[in-house]
Image (cartoon, rainbow, N blue to C red; front, side, top):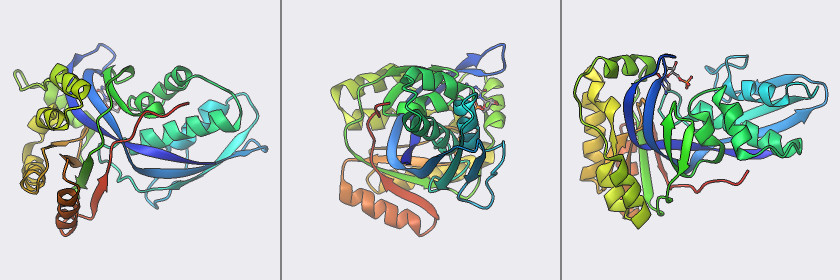
Length: 284
Ligand code: C5P
């Protein structure tokens, strides 16, 4: 079975505090996009597990989140799985590539085995793998709170063009959380304003309010992120922001031609530069 692992973007990301378990209390508006990986998932009667991760530098053992998702789902059934990933989503990009692959494996195995688990059961399973996996089970547009697993569906982002651009460097997620902790006062995203703009179907209103608190603690890497954001807005984006813990930045366009031109322009300097659209929540 071939399944799409949709990329995820953060329309906003706020860190509210730190929990005693070491995780952070987050408030994020998440959006899935058409762009993503394709996974070929097959059941194995012999109980063995294997994965072709699609990139030489990605693990094909127990460190691979998609493989771990298969082991978790099939625990106690005697069945195994082989997975082949057609990898497109850049790694360490803040686009939930690994989380979305894991969620796609859970969806595929739910169908292939006829287990008929609910979306919530798959999300609960997904949380054992990572904080972004529960959102990726069905994607769409959602408010994510807690570790990222407390999901409230939001009004879908109306169709628009999205240009994503990833600079060559990667950013460590735990390091950014540590820097946010050390910061006393900071700007915060207008999360209710984004949710209201989504309700109205107001794409410019959403784009204008996009904000990610991690951008304020990037240190020396901030310059390149800011430069990409400025290029995107100069080329017609209604707003641009970094997604997750970066390093990808995306801009939202209502003018398709401008979005195409922006992708072409940024592609001259950046290898990972994609033009995509929002995707709607999936059925499980
Ligand atoms: O859950 P996941 O394994 O994706 O998280 C990766 C890292 O991000 C965690 O080890 C933690 O440092 C940080 N994190 C956090 N609070 C969250 C989600 C992730 O501190 N809500």
